Image (cartoon, rainbow, N blue to C red):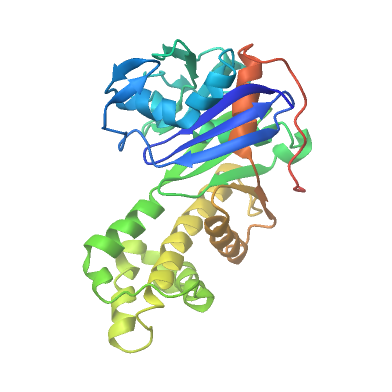
Length: 336
């Protein structure tokens, strides 16, 4: 099957490259650690010329051999590569944003080998407290085409991670979203606070400890918020009620529980109803599994996971931009 597109998911710490066929099928993929904050530094020849530019070196590592074989392949990229610290800044587009809006707003940078790299802009939500995303918009748009109109009308899309995003969609558009810095706060507390002094990494996931953390966040003890409860991760260890290896998963459950309790409150207020929406999760499978467990404990009625969201989104944006011809992408294996 002939390749039609090279798609790059280029973030802060990683770079994922996909070679896609006409129907959006992944023919080949590779993952590098060359995110925009840790680019290659050793100069070498690129396109026959000495090169020390980190973006050029990483781009060549990611897909140079693919372009050697098919120089005419169009290239599209999303993520932090389009930030102010990226290869070329792609200005944010405002909500509501859809495939057509973003596909017509790609920023172009010409690589040393002469290939034009089309960079997807991020999305900004302007309000009293502005909110932004880069990369997540592509994942959201990548799954929207497979969700029926009726299901999409009562759907919340979650993207767990360092900065978890919760996205409201309507009629194929990103309408609004919330960000919780849960993952980054967990890392800071575990690595740079006193809570990490007694923690030990276990061999696997301690479900009981995680569930205990979630329940504390949802209980009366959690009503005063995470600043009041996170010290319990240390105190329960000092009193012998929580082993050193259980403490990381307890803290994880506690923080995710607080995140989802706040999310449920916000959703009920916005919807003016007690019923919560269905949730579609996108991201790392093991992290999504934690969130699914906690979402169900918080009363969200249906939680599913989507696959290949980034590749699908980049293909859809490339179609909208006219980089490739339109073709239907097989729907992911999920039911809503």
